[in-house]
Length: 185
Ligand SMILES: [Zn+2]
Ligand SMILES: [Zn+2]
Image (tube, rainbow, N blue to C red; front, side, top):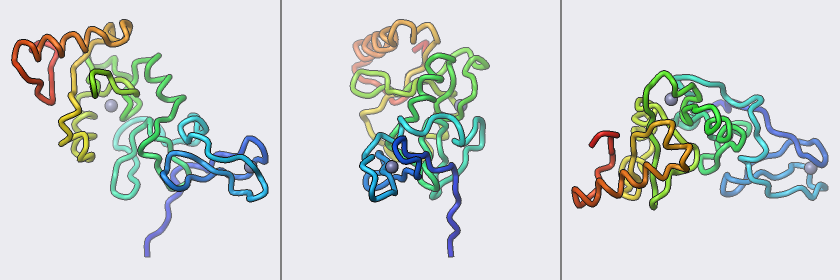
């Protein structure tokens, strides 16, 4: 028998204050009150920061997977495909790691995920956190669409365009992109 672990409280419905719950594709929340009309709101927008798993390593585990700091948690479910909007903004503004939530300042550089010529939402990660995320997520490990680039904080101020330029220069020079592209390569 498995026990259900409540990782975070259910957020409440803005209309009737009853709990909201994840359903279907685990990206949207629905009001449990059948008489309430409130439906299909993006999970990443309702969770906020309060009651969500805190910062640091090791991450809490749900269904055998570590839960990144930016993943919204609703009850015992994790919305793996969504991002906690409040935490993504905090990560951007304060240069925090999207995986563990701790400051990236302790390391001189950080790493970002690049897909289809753009830096993926959620911003930077510690090198160690990127390795943990890739160990756990087969898509991040095997999908050739993803490239991981080492970055400086200044790159973010220019909408990451220096990162994309460095990747393009690397590809021009070497004819291909490896999955990990360090700053000086
Ligand atoms: Zn409601
Ligand atoms: Zn980290």
